[in-house]
Length: 372
Image 1 (tube, rainbow, N blue to C red):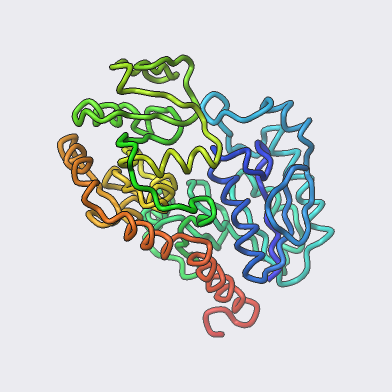
Image 2: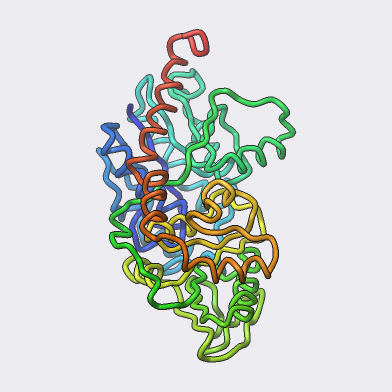
């Protein structure tokens, strides 16, 4: 397949932007699709680490940093999914022109930002003539527009269907989980650090305060990593939506961590805590932990019901007491089994064939569709 893969305007497609799950998904997709033999044409900023047949730069780092600063803080400057905003309209217009010059009949246009990227599909005559199909291939958001979507979980697909008030399914949609590079987590962790780990944005909806309650109930140290702290010191974290106070020896904030440091934190953790309050479309941090053999302790709703095998690769809880029990039971899980089961489900090698099958199903649409 020839795949036109369009990135996002707020980051470069490099590993420097680990905190944006969508950006990292695009970077890993370049490797996964290329390794599968697809021809990937990537449209992103002028800095890129993702493997592809052709990289088309749609904006410079100077332009990106003028909008977002030197880096990108997903808490203080969240990406707004609104195509009328200057950074979207500029990138969408450039993407439309670049794709128009390269697209061929039978290609797929891979978009990952819903309505924010809809103007690209709307502005391409080759799409309107049904010679190229626009696919929303990583739906973890609500604002879908395409006839063909791959959702990150069944929980999220059904949530979006409900939001659309659809009581009828769509046969050419798919559920394909997020995917991870085993090289990012090369070792089996042993949990010898003994601490609990919270890894993610410091916002109320991610359940940071619940993670702190679990620490207080169990007495295990909590390490918090991720963007969003306004002020911190041992035993104290101040974020825009909350403050945590505690024993300086029991609460540590390490900020946003680079890939190698992230993997090391996970390997030495007794367990990862992901007590998200909302319905997670996927919740990749739980899978990242399990890839290193570290059990994930999560909420019992959203995509976690599909990714965390209760009592096998981690635990899901409904009450604080259950969460504390899960922390104590985490040490009894076989970390080797946790790692192997997670690799078998969420590695690039495991998920790549799911996309191949979806592309093949869609390819029948050129030759009769359902009756092909």
